[in-house]
Length: 173
Image (cartoon, rainbow, N blue to C red; front, side):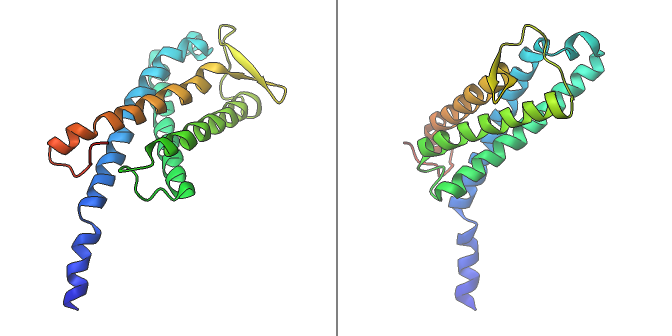
C-alpha cells in the first residue's frame, strides 16, 4: 500500500504539470490570437453593418470562445492520433502539421454549415472566397486557422527557454 501512495504524487508530478502549463498557455495564446482575428475580420460579414455594438461584441466573444474550443480539440486530437505522449517536450512539429489542417478542415465545414445550411451569417462582397465542392467558403476564416495556430504553437515553442528559467520543467528545445 505504501508503494501505491508514493506512485500517486509522481503521476501528477512535473510531467503533468508541464502539460497543464503548456495547455493553459496554448488556450490563452489561442484566445488572444483568435480574438484579434475575429475583430479584424468582422467587417467581412454583413453583421458588421446590421448589428448593434452589443450584438457585435457578443458575436466576437462567442466566436472566439468557439475558436478556443476548436483549438483545444484539434490539439488534443493531434496528440492522441499521433500518440505524441511526449508533447510538449517533443513532437511539436508533428502536432502542428496535423493540428493546423484539422482546424482548417473543421472551419471549412463550419463555414459551409453556418452560411449555407443554418444561414447564421452572410459574407460581405469584400470577403475573399474559395470554391470548395461548389460552395463559396470565406478565405479569412480559413487563413485564421493557418496563421493563428501556427503563431501560437511557434510562440509556445519559443517560450520553453523562459519556462525552464522560471521554474517549469519544460526543457529547452
